[in-house]
Image (cartoon, rainbow, N blue to C red; front, top):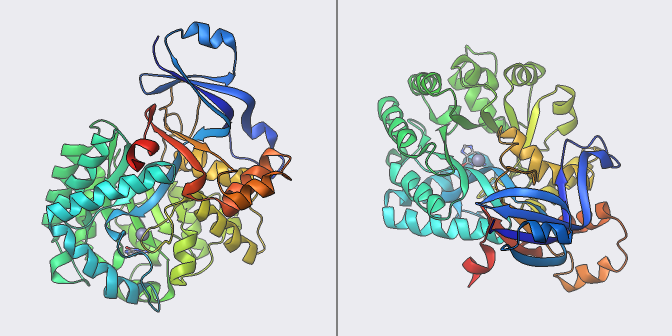
Length: 435
Ligand code: GUN
Ligand code: ZN
């Protein structure tokens, strides 16, 4: 068998860590190896000469002393907002109307969408992210540009056309019928092609009429395997407006509940200001709460309450939310997540963080046998981390004795510089796209 063998220190999670010392939740090989063929993981374990003999034609790539892990997963990101990052605003609604809804209009232009899509995947790879759940814009051409580029790079990606038919500039609005028709056409065109998945994407309750949400429900019923992604309970002004628009429904999550949009394939961005009823409904439906710490701090939306969501047994994922978010890096994201939880008096251990950005996010996407793991049969989407890539980190590494300490340093100080390589379906992609 041809293929590749990556040699280095190897880490892969088996389950969610129950606290900082739950060493049974992961497998770690000090002198480890990951064998890859046909874009999939063939084996993971200790390095041995026997492994080389079993794959005599395989290329051996020696990443020692770096750390080999599953590629990072970002469960909520807006690719058309690359040029919105760092926009100065009072709050979410001002940020949306002043910058975001202006910028997204540029995606009517196919050439612009194609340029940004290419730059977007370059960034993900630079930061070690191999799968993302992404919002496009209302324009079908923005979805075509996204999936064309993802497919070219053979990346496992989830995305969809944003549906919005009110409370935004005319140039960004569709209609219930147009949103339905375009989404359906795009789903047929892209879902299941290569490594691509479609997400039905009503932007949020503020920009969809009841008629549009009804047609989203029709789509969701016709395509029960499609993802659904939207936003909820991000900022207080947004919540007040949602309550005005849907006065007869019990709360904001209740809007999506009423229109049949909750379920195990539903990703709800933010979930900061939640009532007990909303938490109970999220649990009952198996919907996922997506924690977006850099965005929540930058926009000033609030502090996600992880302990309360966990107490309610709600599934939790973590994401950058570019361009409300401020970094493409899942390391930077979990660093800010750690700080949010510190302010709430809640603990987030390094092994829990690294679980969240890999297997935890894979589980949130119901893709845990495919990505976020190095178990045999999974996609060979891999990141290689070098905690000594930055001089001050190398200095600190002189004092680091344990794996959790190294992970915590990577999270606290790391960014694209610590990503030595990113493999997409077994192919090295970072050095290629950097050149
Ligand atoms: N709510 C609705 N649209 C958006 C968006 O683009 N970004 C964020 N952060 N929140 C939203
Ligand atoms: Zn968002």
